[in-house]
Length: 385
Image 1 (tube, rainbow, N blue to C red):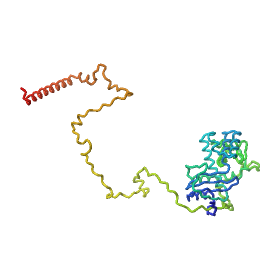
Image 2: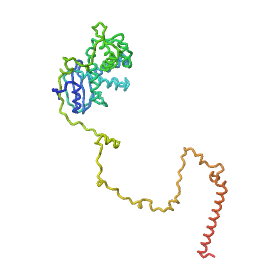
Image 3: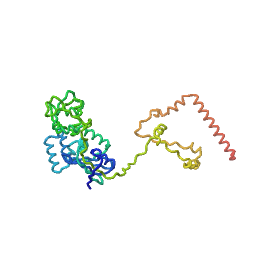
Image 4: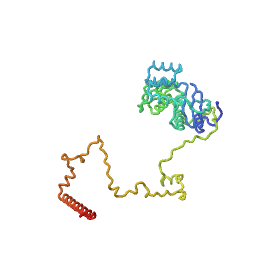
């Protein structure tokens, strides 16, 4: 269903902002001098912006930047007119990163032209948005503010593009973008011709040209003037005359459907714990204390019944030590290398110490005497004479 009603808002930027704030899903349509512009919104986000000549404009930029030849560009344009899609024509022909960047800039240009059309805006509600060149990952409200700034700064240049001439100024360019546009201005060039031959979108071209004029990199002159004085091109943000009409005063308005609750997106739990300074600066962080009676103690654990608790200490001490086989790929430890004569180095060190050797012999004699006494006792108890 097509909806087109009166609203308080008159600036297209505010109409799109109102649609985002309401969380509606659908398409906004406006007719300009070069055809219809459509902006698609869904649940508070701008997802896409289409124009009537998207494919041709992308091919124009590829040709102006030197990425494709004249013959190739003519073939692509003919294929577009025959019904081929831009994606099927360019995927595999140009780098993927370049193709995606071209689509992103076309999206911004269409949004810029949408908010610059002083025509009737129609809203068509949709269940969902499934169209070409969907763009995500941006702040839609911040994007609208940026587009509004570019529109107000470049509108005077756009309105006089056929009557302004750009010439190199006395200041050298400080950006690569400015240097490329300056080459197109030598010795002088009509602003509209500069737009048509620029490797950038028209909004980006005019925005850079405005900045270059402010810095003195280029100078703008009226075509009908004598060329002695630069033209006075004031941005829309300048103070208007007392009898000047607002820029969007004559534009018809539009009313969107009733506002609905925005979709709540679950947020991850915070990974930080607020300290005293955080609580002091934000009282909402002062969480209530836990009820001590609501805390249940842990059940007692009887460690005497744990597996292995009834093992005797002697059994643990007498347990053999497990020996693990050495990894065949592991280099041998030089400290563990056996002696060439078959004698452990530690044993050799003990034998060389006379005190230790004497103590060992004494212990062996005592052990022999104990064995003899134990054997004598067993004979007496068994009645052996």
